Image (tube, rainbow over all chains, first blue to last red):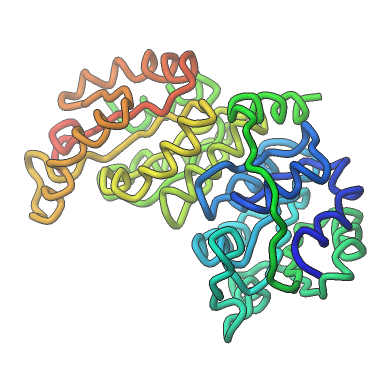
Length: 184
Length: 165
């Protein structure tokens, strides 16, 4: 399975949750598959999906899922100790790890080589870290939501992209409808 | 006057309840005060762009955020300021230690100091420079201004303001 297939499969689970989605193709895919006001799409700023999601989770009680990528977590490695040391049990970091920088042409990442993001997350102090295969992501994600424990999920999937349009929604519109969904 | 206490009193009075910090000797007193106040969730960041991400999230989650950092961070965070804080129109008071000004003992700090205001100006970020102790009286109005206009706003605080260090 490639990332867009994983997103398609978990879209019914994401639908009822607050989602902060990573820059580039992941946001474009989620936007095409199931656009919801509860989705915050990152149009720039690679690496900060986990930080933004943690901030939302710490500020209010609803469950927040950050959909991140292996390349983006590598860009902002400092996020993992911050997550580990500021436990928000309504926060789930879902790292879709396809071992490549998908949005820029599938250049390989170190996570697809020797580096294990699950092991790094554990070493940083994250207490609930689950590595799963792409096909099991829905089940693992639902279990993490139901557990009400802060969880880091590393979903191992294949590299590959589909062709799709960029998001043309105004960023302030994306932000405003997300904030209304948070407050509702 | 205890400047650190006055600054944090103003944060609390303006309902700023989520503050991220990156360590700085000059701002040590403010950081300690943030940690001590029950009204504030203090979350140390490993890097300032990470901190701005946390602040963006906290704002969307319904809290008023702030970041406390050194001016070297302006060099680190240009992309985040532009593509996140400004692009999505979010407020962010940035209390900044203006290293490399008068009384600075470390030459390398001057290298960033000479670019600080030029970069903030280039980014169209409203910028205030606290040089004398009484300048802190404007802090409350600056916070109100920041949350009125939904912009990142810089408050540069130099060594003279802090009485040397």
